[in-house]
Image (cartoon, rainbow, N blue to C red; front, top):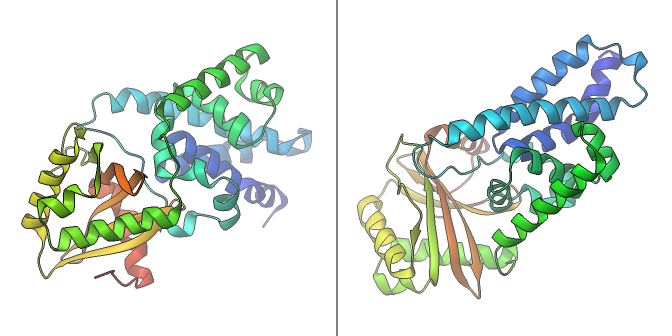
Length: 299
């Protein structure tokens, strides 16, 4: 490996983490890194005082351009859009430990409240620990403008944050209770899982059956999941507890195919939000990795 390639590889994990948090899709983040590598390969690195700053700047601006296009495309997306999980192998332990919350699927979804420019400024300053001056230089804006973007981002995120943070053990317990209720579905056991104002959000992308708008209320969610259980339960159905993006998740299999990935937000041992990814393209990477690892299902 030549020195230029080695230097890029040295910073690759950080660059991927930034691009993924910007875009919410591993494949898009990889595309950004590929474009950044091409530009890096053409660059005379001997003239650079700070190679890392150059790479972060290029990666951020490429991700910004792609995110602006994606925002336009998502306006025509069929139903809600949810971020795509990383493969377990893509979650570097150090990154997951240092910035676990910013990698969670719930937090990535929260970032969708921000404009692309606010998202970039917030991530650089608050997640990747660049100063306002450094962030402004990366984005090519004045420092005061950078401060305003970060401030607006914090306000927007504060408005959308869950009221309480639930630890991993509580989330896992709720998912286990959810599985038990789905295996022997009745309205009382399902309704007991949900807070009164619980919401269900499902991403099928117009490719598979999914609720096209967020569904609110414990009664409606209990009816929905009872019907899903009655329609889908059988010898070929399996529920598997897993960890995706550093948090507990539930994988649902049918006849050996991954049909849904779910995660929850909760308060006082009740589910306040349940998110389900059903789009086959978003499940393909997780299915392939899980099968290759020979992971055993929960039931």
